[in-house]
Length: 411
Image (cartoon, rainbow, N blue to C red; front, side):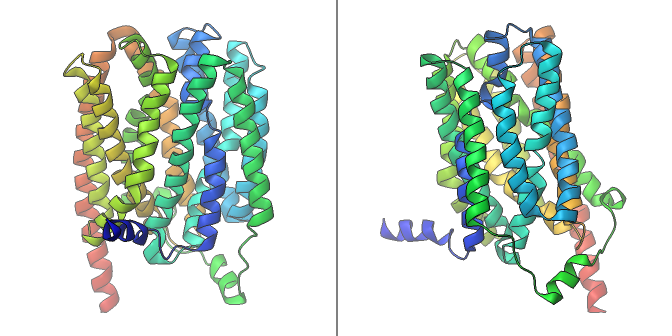
């Protein structure tokens, strides 16, 4: 048991104190993030919107995220990741508090757009911060630790959020979410100061190498893969809670517990899993492939039985896919990004997630409304099979390109 315990701790050693501080701030922020997983339920149950209307509001979420991550990537390269993170947390917190006072359909579309624009400018900045505060060999584990903090907070948040909804009200969530964002910004501002660069490092930062993202064919293939897989993945944030309620008759607190299972698994198992995968030298592209496979299985299993236990099995399979695919695809995008363009590259990578919100929620809601849940899960499974094949193609092409670069540099 002691050997197992020491082996578990070994996965956390060697990470910088700045990464630990960023993880702490991220945990505080995400622990209060109770609004997002219950937003579709809130819009249906409290505001009385139809599923297509909810789909359009969630599309506004995606458009705001798309614009916000693009702006965040540009600002990260120009003013630095530190300022982007602090400002995003602070003004995003104020936005969550204000959102509860919007009642009209168009008002909520605009409000959600503006809120997520500010909040998601954080995403490319935090990836660049991981790269800046980590040794190259620790980047994937640093990303995994940030994700652990996100999911530790996210596992606690929905569980508490479900209890608050059941016993108090939906509107309490907006105050808690907003307050924790502002608190996270204040702690980061006080505890973690911007990284001071030496003269040589400042000169290196100004160096711009490589192709822009849209001229990098392999990177664009990665982005297409991430957009398609993310469109499927975001169903767990909008359509899936409604499926739990309408098809399996679960209450909000039980839905919160299912979401808690996702976060708890990531907190306990992701770091050891990433550490083990790195020890067996799995490539970042193949790890991304296996992430797609498990995500696909998480949807198709729902159509195999009406037994409530398949919901747990589906959540476990989805979480395995997330634990394997997400940190390695993040690290792969950073690895592909040349010097001086990391903010822009990671901005585009984050925009792939944003595009999924634009198409995913609306498409999922309307497909369920027209054809039902079972048909929707079959379609999602089929698309993810195609995405898995595309990822194998990326693995083959990327392996050849890196081998060529090594041979060329040796000459």
